Length: 576
Image 1 (cartoon, rainbow, N blue to C red):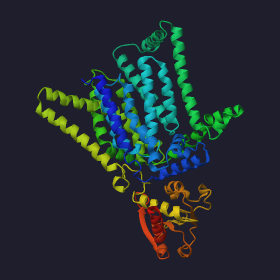
Image 2: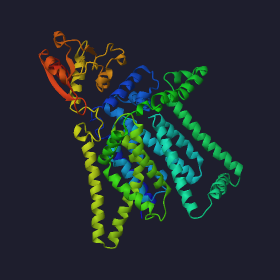
Image 3: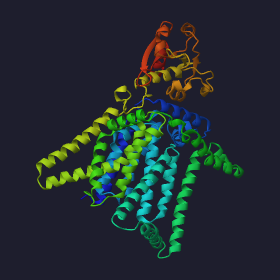
Image 4: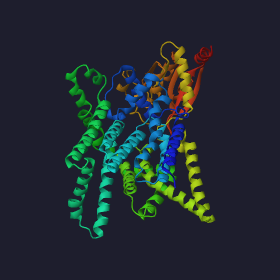
């Protein structure tokens, strides 16, 4: 039997190791396309102090929090990912909120899944919002559960804060809310059906027993007074709503309007409206109108399941075990509602997210891993207890089988984490999203930054081009570098703008109609082009070192031409 103190100590130990796993070499992988996009806008906000909610880059949490981070630490791949890594690493602490519903060994097992599942680890080392919304929503659920367990509705205040913070990360916090409500309704219906099947009256349960139980709980909270208990409950509920609203507005209110409103009370209502109703309208217009979900379902489901199987095989196996043993009362002699709730939530997530998501992205699988970690923890703890019992009864075969299963699981998780660590190649494309450059581009970007630091004038030319057999599409070219989103093809540069902006690289671009010979007449020290333009540029850029890198996981390479003399001068300056 695991004691309370040992279980809590184990959870803290797991958190410490989980944080270490997330922080070591956190900046080692080059930024993904999406990290570069959001990172660029964070840098612009940090520079100008102006920011407003833009649904296409999701919630304002990362821009606002990273702005504070960059005020203390330099803007790097490591520091940009730091908030996500910390939140993901602290997720295992949340298991303690569910201590009334899970055995202590199950709590430890749940913490292990949260700390070391390969998908949760990889996307905790990734500047995206999925780990954030999953963690904050799960913590909010935990505080609601504690409020129910203890009758202390003051827990609804941290629940409101946590859920509002999750809402500030990504719009699918609404999907979490729907999952919670739907799973709760199914659990309630399940329990009601079980009792009515045993001959009890549904009318008596719904209209007599439940109201009487609610009144009894309120009286206990009010020291025997129903009115006092109702007042305390109202304060707790209103406190949770107020906390949610305050945090929501803090994140979604535009900057610097929010700060200016404190010195101009007349402007405050408009700022509050922009940070609440205005934000929700923008969110609905972009993400809730269904336009992002207009795609075929089965290919997205196949992609989801493939990532799930490769990224969480151990969790899947133990979740099936946990569902079975809990459903048939093997563990607790009864069906536990939290395990059933998590199962419903997880299954709906598996089949729902391929419909809700706008692109085929492995990170959405995180939203099924988190709920299904609960039955998986039940399965692991059951297997561990079976092994312990086999040792006690000297069942050699049982010990061997259980030990083999547990050791294979540990080995599989460790091997997957090692493989996916800072992976950036198509060998791991089932877990990585396709818009991931290869890591060997990073040293080249460092050289570009070094050349820029010693160069006067334009540092980099991005060679505008049309992809082969697609004259309607343009890459790299923008008409006005001071307004890059004016296009036509700023996004095709990602994640380069994050690195160029951070290193103060002066860049320009050429129109697709510009010939290689024109570029060769007076080129800057660095020219960046797509691979299909390499041959014609190479003949014009004499004295340039040529480096080719995968810009996406497949079928898209970039070529970087660096003036050898400029690079030598930069290196000499760095070593001086």
